[in-house]
Image 1 (cartoon, rainbow, N blue to C red):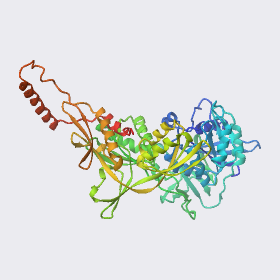
Image 2: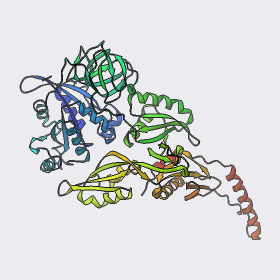
Image 3: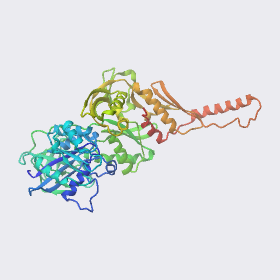
Image 4: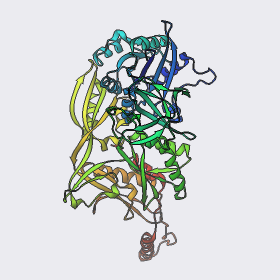
Amino acid sequence: MDNIRNFSIIAHIDHGKSTLSDRLIQKADIISERDFHDQMLDTMDIERERGITIKSQTIRLPYTASDGKNYFLNLIDTPGHVDFSYEVSRALKSCEGALLIIDASQGVEAQTLANLYLALEHNLEIIPVINKIDLPSADIERVRGQIAEDLGLDPDTALLVSAKEGIGIESVLETIVFKLPPPKGDPKAPLRALIFDSHYDSFRGTVVHVRLFDGTLRPGETIRFLHNDTTHKVEEVGTFQMERLAQPLLSAGEVGYILAGIKTVSDTRIGDTITNNKRPCERALAGFKETKPVVFSSIYPVASDDYEDLAAAMEKLTLNDASLIYEKDSSAALGFGFRCGFLGLLHLEVVQERLEREYDLSLILTAPSVRYEVVTTDHETMIIDNPAHYPDPASIAIAREPFIRAAIIVPERYMGAVMKLCMDRRGINKNYQYLTSARLEMIFDLPLAEVVYDFYDKLKSITQGYGSFDYEIKDYRDTDLAKLDILINGERVDALSQLVHRDRAVERARSACESLREEIPRQMFKIAIQGAIGGKIIARETVSAFRKDVTAKCYGGDITRKRKLLEKQKKGKKRMKMVGKVEIPQSAFLSVLKSDKD
């Protein structure tokens, strides 16, 4: 165990985590130059295009240090977005140390702080790394000051690196070997291993990523998942080195994988403890919790014929993504589809893109909603995540909505704009503190429903890209909830219904009606687009009709002739309106999602 080092790389989005991983892989010489490409650990096209890690990876790097000994460095990569913070925490629990990367031009940001606190909770040894020192805008001394003031770490221990140019990579590897502690554990004790990730292999089933804390594991042994309470026979164990490498056994302190003929990823829960069925450990590893979705949306195929293809695609996608939950749903306007739960908005976007790209589907998504708690007058508590299931307002005693604790780090000059944005979104200012003379951290309690729309985009716009944002789900609080219905030609379109705060209902209704007016094509009759709460209309737009000039043949003569023709046309339009059906194009549904124009 003295020759093993388990470490993770943590950073704010776009501070160079994947690029540094690439340089470490190249230095370890485990892949030929011909097979190498940028972002080796990002296996999905979406990850490469967006420059974010969605699915974490693990890799074992052999390294000969300056003392002549051979070491095995297990790099446990982590996702780089707040939606996946639970996965990050499990990956960190599998490590003894972490490289904390800070961009030399951007400095310390919100997720840098959040990830540092997460790492300190697990008592990890932190190595600060100042990356991108080759940039013309790099200000190393300013960043050193932020490391001391904001993070409370020793700025003199910070390593200066340019992952892009390959500067300082050797010093990173040496520091990992000599500064990070080796793993602890007893190979002779009963087996105790942590599941920190899993992925699906179409030939071998689920590949379980594990860190062994105690004991040893060999093929042929029967293992038990403590939280799932299921048993499996181990077929193969091994380590990750770009490819899976089978090993005769895994021992305490090592990071590797298990193949045990497990059919789906959902059978393996991240954070679960694995032990030997015949010789179990006394207690499970602490910190396990069920991943709960926070954002809900319904997915429908544009063409109803594609429903079967969508069902097959959803099934395949959940093999790889255990945090996606779905159930069948139907809508009068859109036909059959699925109601899905996501970890956050980024997770929703990723699932949508993967379905469209990998399975060649055209989809419509309904407005994202959060999970509300409703207490009825009969003292029954209901959890509502779908506007269609919202009960009669007369039967509701109390409605509650989820709140988040948001940490926003911005340069001082944007303080007023950020304060206004948060107050407009019903935010409660809890605290703010100056990290340096020019940067401050603002803490707000915000309703999750207000953040779900386009809060992050707005924040980036008003701070010119300098604002950074991190959040955690806090609690449920009383709210004045209303169900906003959209009526087209007097007919309620269930797919456009939203649950909103009553104070924001008029604004949201106007915005939705205006967007629909732009998108719905004109007919031979007038189309009324209305926003309503119950029986009360709170917003209206009208799509004007195409109108034939029936009086064109009247050149002069008595006005009564013209009136007679216009009355005849009016009756025809009225009859047409009664039987006419309005086709709502796909773009209209999408426009309502992007309709938060405040």
